[in-house]
Image: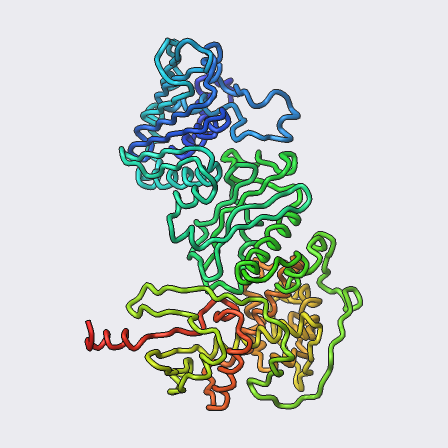
Length: 611
């Protein structure tokens, strides 16, 4: 078979296919160039999802007349001079392929003017065919019009998504640019309609422009440095979340990127406040030396690699936990990072993450010793608690406010002081899940499973922090059958589990055995507990010391609450008493509300007594 040397036209078409996948990729390349040109005003206009027309205009430096033709040549760039520049890329665009690739598969018109030029200049390139540079009139900056995408490669055009889908992708990336560069005035127009127009202010202004008032009112600032890396931005308040991760934006050195390390760190820091299938929201900026991050991983330049991912994880996780602490304790003086980290149930030595390796079959002598108190079995009541004077101080005080989108128009977490719960009249239990209470013109529904879980979690937290865990040996050890991968995973958690009072070991082939549990959680459903851990096996790394203990405690407390239990009147009063004295926020550790309050007026509206 003969080997052919391809001509430049075919080569350029192939190269264009690697860079220009869709209208989205064109917009991204052009806006990157506008930002690199120092523009503080950028407008983007598209028609028919960008398939028919894309116009990007900026007030940047412009292109010198002598460089206009060169700007359309393959691998022509003003941002890379030699090989060493690739090791520390500080610009958004750098490949030198954007205009060459775009103009090979579209009809492209460039109009540009530099500050010192007498006039502007234009050049049209249609499908790789160059026109002539001519004088034109325009303001300082550059305007690029791209029309009839893939007009000369109909097979490529046929595989484009529907215009609305292409538009959605462009709209999303423009919103990320607004968040990544709040100082730039962006204007985004779709089929003649303005979708976004930012004012070039601060990050909060940009967030308001993209997400609106409700989002802006439910985020808290975050700022922290570790070594030569600085984190800043905003994360969601407790109780505010979204059902997917599309409300998460990470900006690294002014570049919007997607990174699982940061996403996971934020999630794990918020997990105890999140309901199932809910995710925290954030707009975070990481600033670091360019040499410490590789942005040349993929042509899209959205995926990156950190030189020290464990440092990034530690920084983000601890910063988010501190921000949550501060938002829930607004009247308290600022705590040190170590105090907050300790109270939040993560390792007090943040830097230890990259120094500790946990082997699957590690022995107890290989980790920090802990004194555990052994006790013989003796029955205790469900609400066997110490007096309030013996309890460890609760770290959260302020309760989040919830709003309901349904007909009930209910309010959550209205009550704080001891007399509030104590003065409620106990009406009864509903569905073996809720307590029905009455006071004045209000009815309160209390999820006593969630309340019990909250109390267990807070008491267990205090015991673990005080290293005062009481261990209950099981009369009949619990054996759980797993596959080999799952066994090794559970054994890798052995040190953290032992610290919490769980004595776990291998038991023959593909089985584990649990010999003891913490006395505080003696009613734990061990099958449910182990299955919860296995379910999250892919997302939970044993060497992530910072959140492993918090995660295990949360799952253990969830499994310690018996479904369908019926409370006696004495147990109900004990629950209310302990919630009064001990609750930090009226949320279970997984973020579900504990109470809902319905007014008499609302009930009367249901029955049409009042309008």
